[in-house]
Image 1: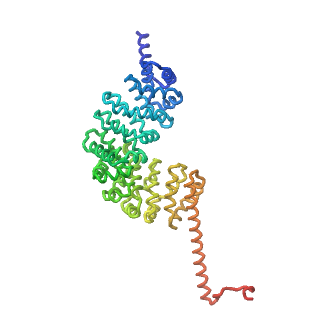
Image 2: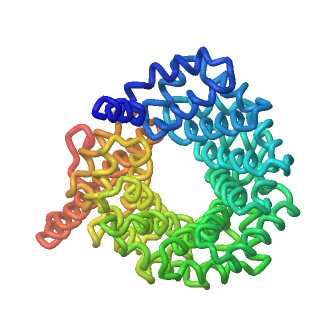
Length: 473
């Protein structure tokens, strides 16, 4: 029995990364559907490994075969190939596998599956592929430019619950880009359908996942001005704010993100402030990076909201009165690099108001901003230097800036590869030097006035000045 049990263990052995070369070789030479399905299932067993997409790309033969199998007449082979494409697209970030899979013909054929109402399992798998591939920025731009998102909308409106869920998830991922969101919301009729569908699910569904995914899709689509205008026109903002004040993080985060993205629309800012948007973001900014995983993005959303709302003089003044300035300075000290970057963006806007700038300096804004400016991070240094330039407008702020080592930081910034950063750093350095010269000139003028007064008291002041022999002649 010992020998037989040993063979049984061998048969049940899990697939490991060590088997990947053999699996890829089998896929490359597979001609029969049976062999292809068996090898694809083995590859799917390794789908969570980061090395798999890169290995598939290096082989050079697997991607074309996946395209062929995804249009096979064998239903099981076709479904397995699409699942494999979805897994590879989701796992690949820098390997280029997702982009290689997402050819125009492949995307069109996957989108056309939405019309095949008889095969529900195939439609479900195709929707799953779009939900996975939509997370890649290059792929979603391809999808939106080719208007394939219109075909994906058929998955969203499917009567099959699983297909609908994958469709909603895919549509939300497509909109995770300002350009794509605008392209998806170019027609009023389309936007009307989007708002009606998503809010029907948000207000009526019992499935919390569907509700949260719909909220996230609405939040991302709100980057498009036409969509955010439609939300206000159809009186959906009270619903969004009600969700944003919910205690459940899964509802609160996407709803607050929707408010932050709507704030980018200049016609809605005053209306959002009347709904107490500033107070919402101030409360969210108090939840630090040490919080629960589902609450760790609160500060990032709050910083984005502050930045978008504080885009005119009156709203910047209001932000200083409701505690937004303290919140932004607090977020600049966060351990999370992304939160610091968004907070630097907010600081660059809020600091354009002189009173806000004074408050920020009093709260100690210079050390974290200078550290960000010297970090070398291409995303952070731009915003940090802009904020420093806006803050260092008054002489008092410039004096504090120099005390905190700002001039040394500007010397580092002058060596940056970013031409915008170099330009702002040089301008700020010149501004501080000119202020020093003006201060020196004023001091010299005061000293001359004091000396004149003393000479006049002694009666030794000569109005024409002391003349030399040449001038007397």
